[in-house]
Image (cartoon, rainbow, N blue to C red):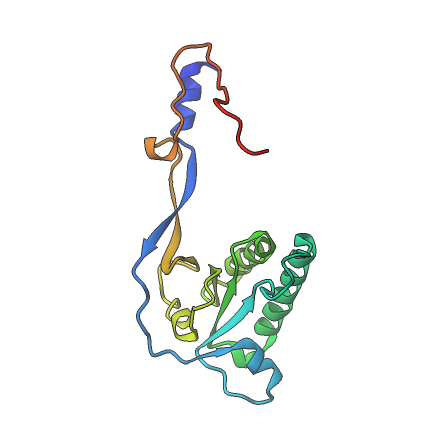
Length: 191
């Protein structure tokens, strides 16, 4: 393969960038918690239901939990909620907003939900956020936004978009045109 061919292939590389969108306004949709619906008999189902799949933040920080065990637990809980949602006739006219975190333990939930969304478009929204201040109204307002997945980071609502990977702002390192070059560490960082 020639150097010119490699150079043109770089133009085809894409990356995910998170683009800020306007904060959703109240939609007037009714919202409720998934746990309240499945534990409380014949409760009316609101238009938007929120299922939270986040690690317990009250756990002892001196003895951190096993991230693999957390991932398995959260993913299994989410799968069970999705199966309940899809088999329950009373949920067919509602949207399930699955709220998860942004850490390693939430990665399995995010992957599962993207697969579920591809099989059942419009029935699920994935919200990735570590913001404990999100309200049911804010989560309900995510219905009808631009896409089935978003994250809330420092109060900003963002959606994933594809962008060219080789733009100057995406690469802090400029590789010299010469054949022989070396990347060296200028100083030691850490212990």
